Image 1: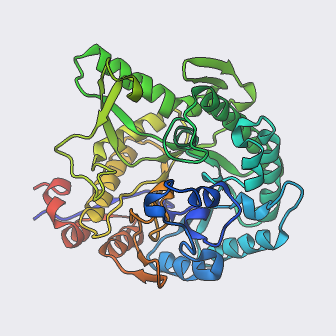
Image 2: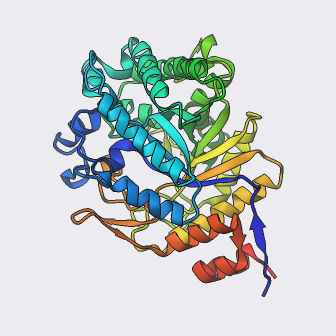
Length: 442
């Protein structure tokens, strides 16, 4: 039986990713808290509630678990509605609380990566039109300045906006996010203003902290034509990729913004990515459907041969991850995998998913692609937006009623990877023996 280890470069960042509304709890002042109160918007009417009780202090024990597991970094987000609860008011106590969290990471020898916007907006922003209001560019820039001034002692690695494409599609093209619109014109305005908001935040951060590394977390979903030889399938897959995957990333690279068949130039956005942040979960196959206008003339589906997560939300497609990394490499900048994971309460798929995706990342690094870190989604089960508590992405499980953390085998598998800085044959044999011969062929 072959033995060996796929090692990663020295100084590689290993961590998990979290988002404020999903883990902090006790937040009633943002658009998601509002959304949770609307009937039929969240799975089974569930609410974030205490979430993982990080605002109650349980971040300490979760950071301890991450550090003990060999993680040397953590990606987390700041809750805008806590920092600026009203348009004319700042909460210095909330800023101090986030400073404590950053110190907590530093004390555990973990590098903080901070996201400034991860889907949630203050109620006062929502009430004034949110990202449809051009004024939000100034509001977001001012908020960014306030946070960076407060945290600059501890943080040099920043994500301005998480998944602007998902935020826009979910909230403005019928995807179930607040404000629940299905309006292409509004979607264009939101995406454009997010490009401008990102650019304003980027320049604000660099002015305060020139040494900072600033980027975006792009959700990349590989769209494959259902039939490669059928031109309409290829054209539809290409159209979806240009709008969903490429629109925002290209604007932050070149200043040229193209979305929903419209174009404009946003020169201040050019060259506003010091790294490419990648969120990847799965890939999808696209078939052109000329008689299906309500679904935008296409049908998306997963390869029937690919294993599915327990709710059918994610297909195991590690080669799609390699393709996503190849796309990232086309920007000729350092790459950080800012999210990757699978929902799996029984842990029947998670360890396999983890090893197979990391092996594809190792392959990419061996082509000298500049991948500098990996953040698994997520550290502990959390509130998954409109899907509520129905999906369990955590390395650690969570009993929502008691706040008890539940040890899963993936905790040990990921700890072995982090401590080793690699994927060893012994580790795969122990935690995912069903794929041993695939990763370590004789």
